[in-house]
Length: 257
Ligand code: BTN
Image 1 (cartoon, rainbow, N blue to C red):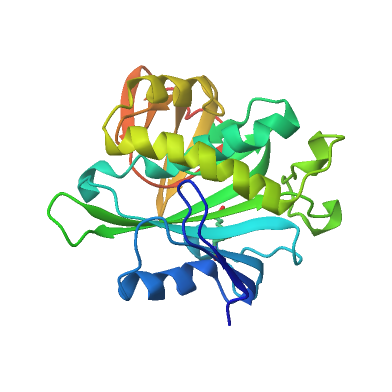
Image 2: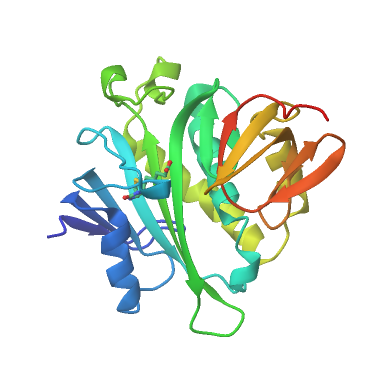
């Protein structure tokens, strides 16, 4: 049962707020099936079956994190939506910087880091839209805001740890409403040149050696940058390799032949 509904957001409207849900992704997917409009956003205090990428669970204690999914119906074909996870990460980085005072790094394909630690995870569900050249996107966003250190997974952080000022999930959600609206407008207009430059400036591990695991494939190389369609370019012994999906970890260079 929803608790309350807010309609005054910039991008997020209406916002449907629940105390507890299985996953905001499931609730919003059902609303999307029923024809919910672009901007419809589901927010929860806690999730009983929150999920991350690659089937991982996403668990946070009640009311300590932004747990939300937003439905967007951009006038962009699905083939042009590969960059949307990175754009969402950029919007999250912008939203939290007034508190952290630090430049949030974007870890390909979809995390935001502060000082090398994960503060946010993003899960995108994308389908072709009802109209030609349109898509239906559900962006699931989890931001650790006041989550106690002992409840954070290894390598994670929260926003509150980086500021002496009070911060709550509701405050961060409001900031994200504005910052996601900005990048979403540029995405809809295909006006992404400057945004792509910023994404690459903020790209975690740029110039460093990493390994990307994509199913059974393991690709090692040095991070060069991200492309307009959201791919990652690695430099592998002098040759560029474009990777479209996978899990990135910092790691050793492949052995030179
Ligand atoms: C990841 O880092 O693997 C992605 C995590 C995404 C978590 C968010 S929390 C809100 C939304 N609902 C979910 O079940 N998952 C996303």
